Amino acid sequence: MRTRRLRPLAGLLAGTWLLAGCASAAAPAARPAITAATAPLATSMTAAGGATWTIVAMGGSGENSFWELFTRPAAAARWSVVTPPGVADNGGLVAAAPAAGQRLDVAFRPSQGLTFSPLARTGDGGRTWATGLLDAPVAAVPDALASGGGTTLALLSDGTIDQAAAPGSGWRRLAAPGDIAASAAARRCQVTALTAVALTPSGAPLAAASCARPGIAGIFARAAGGWQEAGPAVPGGRPVRVLRLTGTSGGDTALLQAGTGQAASLLAAWTSDGTSWRVSSPLPAGTWPVIASGTGPGSAVWVLLPGSRARAVSGPGAAWRALPPVPRGTAALAARTGSAFDALAVSRGTLTVYRLTPAGWAKTQVISVPIQYGSSG
Image 1 (cartoon, rainbow, N blue to C red):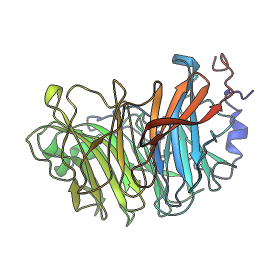
Image 2: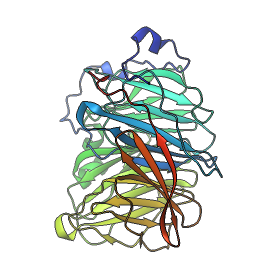
Image 3: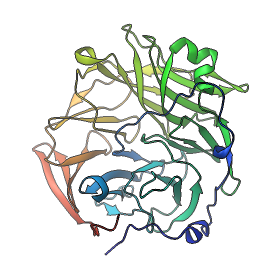
């Protein structure tokens, strides 16, 4: 059975993807810190080559929660578990796929007393992994990692953003805690927390945030040594939180929450250049929290809400649609081409895959994941 005990540090550092820089160990900034938010980590994404990746928690709760990575190759029907081996993953996983190529980068949230985030990278669908290290905890948000054009970004828990230019080059600090909030653009939106990092198709770094000032989506682009406002205008005069900011083969996709309480709504937004956006119609959400979300082929966006509710939008100009109530235990969805979806339901160490058909959800696959309960201790 597969163990989740942390491999010795010497073994971790022996990997070919060694990004162990010391940027995050620099002296703390004098500006007031704006830390990273926390958000549900269960998600799915479709990479440029057509492979779909899904991250869900399995096992149980607390220290018996083990995060697993699954993949479905392009045009394939069946899923496989490809979680990077040998590193404790009780704290959660975050992943990023570049807009081109077959690569997937994965960061492990710290657990078992760790104060840093191990890294893993695959270019062959998860069959083999190279390892590395980020010497600080990556943030507990699904878009804390971004990759593309030879650049990797990492959002850390304390609000730092680090950047690596290429594998083996080491990390350097792109933004210290408080840097973005202190910029003129961010002061106008009154940043309360950082929520994501991404890269434009041209390779410019993006940072996303929650804003206290109404009507402004807190997305900022790095340019000319500073941070400039780059988010879409959001009608309605309500505070906006950027829940997701994800790089896709067509650009960047954002999931926004406008307003709070019963008046809250969700919007998807798309850009092909990092500056010009198209925003969906609002999806009334009220007090329903988003418990999982993700992207799919083309411009698809999906959200999983309490009470077996799921909603999806296929892209700019399309309306949100309600999916049939998802199967019990559904932890994430995965969009297929067209309007098809898979639902991935978890029951301890078993993952059951359902396909959405005209007649409803049909069971298509059951995967037993060997989990060694108690190995996280």
